[in-house]
Image (cartoon, rainbow, N blue to C red; front, side, top):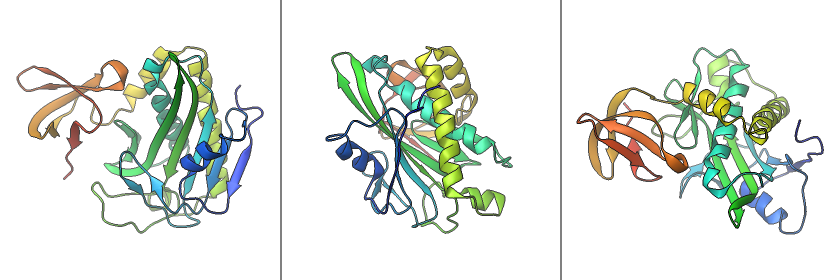
Length: 250
């Protein structure tokens, strides 16, 4: 199994664990699987300019360091898949009333509410990925959130009780190691199958805003490079990259 030499580095506070990890790697060589984490993240980032809200001492905000130099740059979305699957696998151990789902490209939903977000930073040399910082924000014990669309949810809101943060972090680390090991073994078909089984709105027809146009379409899976593939009501295939589609919520 990977991560046998991993280090766990707790920061008392951090603007962003991804940024802290990237800066730390400029002067230190951390073993693969090492975690940089804090329970007080002040300016957590999501995709683009999005902010990740996290009350101090309530949630998991952590970043894992990986060296997937066996992966070509064009395969980098496989890393997003295994991180998402590791979170889903973790959440399933809590016997929740709803199944966790992966909302493309980097969120985890439960019952149409967001419980986790993923942020991946890859470093590429030539045609291969040399280093990855995989960040996770997971709502654990926080129960009050600002008004977002979709609304946020946490483990405590689903189970009714607090979860020990250190155990949640350790359990996620174990799940990440499991899925990363499958990736190292080139078990891509296993990963792809598991990913699609948890894919939010797969084969459901609903409304989206696609390139600034309201359209009725059905998600059918992924296209090359991790782009989202849909089919509209006229039967035309649409592929969308980041920022080209907006999910609508009731």
